[in-house]
Amino acid sequence: MTQTASCGRCKVHLFTQILDGILLLLVLVVQGSMLNYLLILNNQGSAGWYFWFLADFLILIIFMAAVVAAYRFNTKMAKLRHATNSQDESSQTLQSFGWKGMLPSCYMVWILYSSLLITKVILLLKLEIAQKLEMSSQFSPQLLKLLLAASAVVFLLLVESHHGSDSRSARQSYISLLSTNTTFEIFDSVTFLGILFTNQSQLVLPLAMSNGILALSCINFILPTLALYKLSLSAFGLKPASLGLGLLYKFTHLFLINLPYLGIRVYLWTSFDHDISLFLMKNIIAVVILLRLSVPDIILWWQLLQENYRKQDLGRGRSLELEIIYRKPED
Image 1: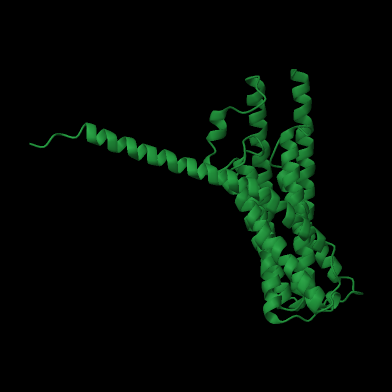
Image 2: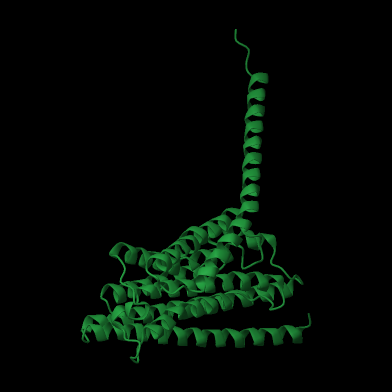
């Protein structure tokens, strides 16, 4: 690659990073401000509720710091690859990240963001704010769902701002596939949570089921942390993904999203005559795909486990043999 082409690519990368940062900032401000508006309005403008804006401001600072740090790191690595005439980082550099992965800020900032978001969601439902929203009002249940679904946009922009791969590379395809899957899971969680917006769903559920739906939805706002950690541990597609982490990712999405969502939706359909959601079919397809993808990984994991046991047994056998050979004869 010539110096001119490399310089042009750096400028394009800088432009896209700035654009991603601006869009990320805009989405966070709109989402946080409007959710805060709902909480403050319901509590008659009590001064204590304005502190949510302080929490949102801190999240904004952390997001921007993570984006800037990611850009500097990726720029440094790009210069290193250009200087060494190599398309990939050295194996020594990749191994140096350890269990924390590359750019751990990506999943750490999501933990903070999602924790703040689910706190607001719990308050909106437990204070019965979301349930009282009228379909004909300016702030409708549909608008609330749209604001919650904006977390998928936050996820996508966060991922895009943390890697510097070529848009035509296999690495980019891997990142895009994982990001798209996570985005659909977030949309599914928001739609599932909408069951509790009684003015829209026209459902009055038992308290236990309402709490179960709320708990599952809140857990699934945090679950993208696992996808981000998977990306970070694989150096955003530069290294093979961990087999154990891959199985954990599949099992959590199987048992914490698709199977429970499928069961509850079928129950509401058959027992409450609730309108069926198209995401029901998505849950069925996801269960089939996750099971098909998990079986080869489980077999491989079992084979590796057995091979490890055989090596341990062989090592113990050799140690015992050496102990017998070099044992000092008794007088």
